[in-house]
Image (cartoon, rainbow, N blue to C red; front, side):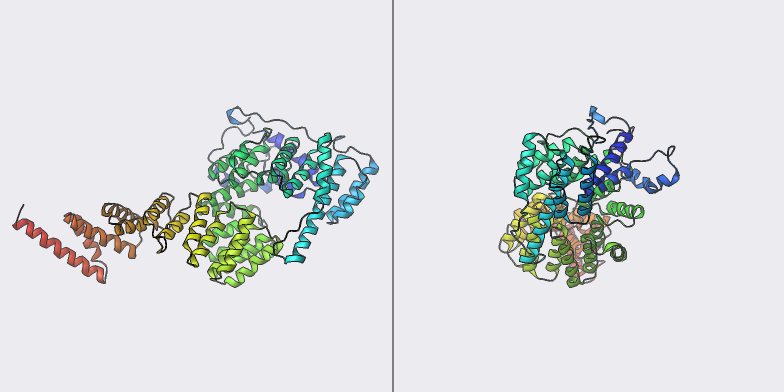
Length: 580
């Protein structure tokens, strides 16, 4: 990793340059990473470091891979390239009058008057002015496309509307690229245009050129990441070895469901960016996908203490609170984001989760729909709304919501799983199995998906018990927290007459229930089977132990246990009187 001072200098420059070009998301990201670098207390007053206080404990608690001197060169002999900062003459390659035109255009842009901004810069030829004009035209086209979609199909409808500025932009930017007069920012816009056109290979090439030329534009990295849907594609990119590449790879690994690799990268980055809330949120996301909910909850609590008005990623925190059924914590979070900014998609999803946990599914759907009106491509809102429709037994609406989620991101295993559930409710196990297979391909370490697939194989229409057993075995090896797989494996082996295998799984299930101090019908069934099986195998002492435990229950199982004990005593007497 580059030294802290190098990163700090580069990010300070990047914040100014990106803000000046109206790339506000990238500028905000750069500023957050800038503040994530630990300040030297000997060079700063207490007021300069108060933003970073109270954050170090959690960094230490969950850091495993980061070690060594934070300012040293990276391990394994990796050397990072140095990209020249844009400043001075290179930054302002035009006169004072031209700069006045740019300032006016930027003012219009900031007021979302994109066409006015582009018009002001129509005769300007500096690279900076050309970029802002092209970017303003692109956003004007996107704005009009959204308006057409709403006019034609409503706020949540599908439409074939396109950005009508893209044709002229592609023509102009491709000419600039061929002539060698294009800069990294125009390459970024060119990449956006090509991506929307569907020319993904060329878009990747162009975006790689953009980030290699100017690596601090996180928006360009994000667009490039969205085009890397396989690890082979990611590995084929010819990227300079700048430290920003580590942020990109960590994020890309996460999207490719390589969560442990992603965690390793982020922990390495934490050596330099010790106080980065962005990195902490990404670590929480990786742990969430690994279903380590306790860790995720601790991280988000710390994030909210450091940044109490944060809304980004808080919908993920609400999912954790929902899964753990933390009513009061989710209620507090929903109230907090409502007061901060209730018209953010994340806020609407959090409130939707709150009403869902209360069982008010109709009200929950209202908020998920509101989130989608604010951002119709907000993936989790489509998926969560599908879950609500499943709860309301409205399967057709659920299928539509899940399909919209899959259209946005075909790698969203939750949407495929939801489709499987919906078709299972409609008693269409062949369709359900198809979708469960897609979900388990994307998330092979989730026991719930294997269990769902196994239950499909168990249905009367399929009745493929051997396949169901294979699925339950995979679920048992994937940390089956609901403790379903072991019992089902024992039950299915029993049905198929595999008594030895059934005994093995009933014993494992019994051991687990004892370790977790759980009682219930599954324990009774396990004890009953083991008592009968041991008696049939003449293992009378074992059988008596299981029967004795069954005597603590009331009902028919107690009577059966007494009957087995009488039978055991009878067989023992026969052995004593008539030895073989």
